[in-house]
Image (cartoon, rainbow, N blue to C red; front, side, top):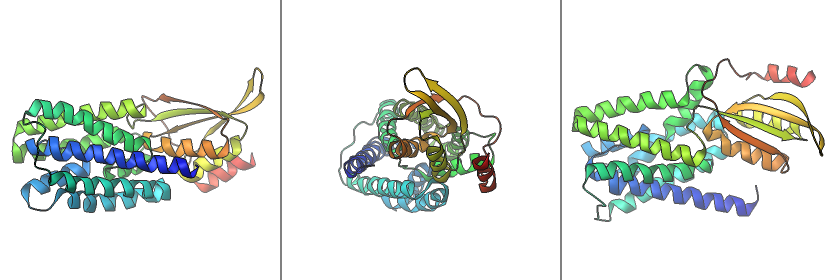
Length: 288
């Protein structure tokens, strides 16, 4: 990726983090509506103590991100740390501004969810992450393919919202759950789908190089198929299934290895079976 593109990507990461921070600090928190994941836990602790939300969010997220980065790569770690640092800083900045957008719980739920989804969607679209629970959920699904990232995150969030209901009232838990669904839909719209799985088909002349880099960067294997273009002649067709958070890395791989490659992305409603992840397996494929 060119330097100019990296700078633009960083700007978008910082912008998305700031938008998300505004929604959390100035719309949701004042009416005691929670976000999901680690941020939701941070909000609960913040409401029960005097610890600043920005500091809580960054500190609680950091261990989850470091665990997830072992499989997601250094690029993911750098982008996520930048995003989370900006998110935490802007939470602190907005907390100093004594202005509340609305005290109406329904308006806060709807517009807070939309704005939060916009911010989170921009961050994820550019290869970052604001909540470490998603990266850990991805690792869990790689060991247990029968579960999806969306299912794991939803279960995690339901536990958080039940805790919020016990502490702040059942209506706050219901509002928070509604905010979560609205946010998820907006993130879906920006990133072409929640983290249930994305089927990717790549038509290229650099099939082996792209396949090797996908395995190296994402730990995913691909299926090779032979194709022939009407004009361009013989091509290699690659097929693989990845998650939403891996789309940005995959785009970078395609740009580096074959800028002329043709790629399509579609939703996957269900995944059965297991990807080959062992080094010995990939070496066997190379010899065939």
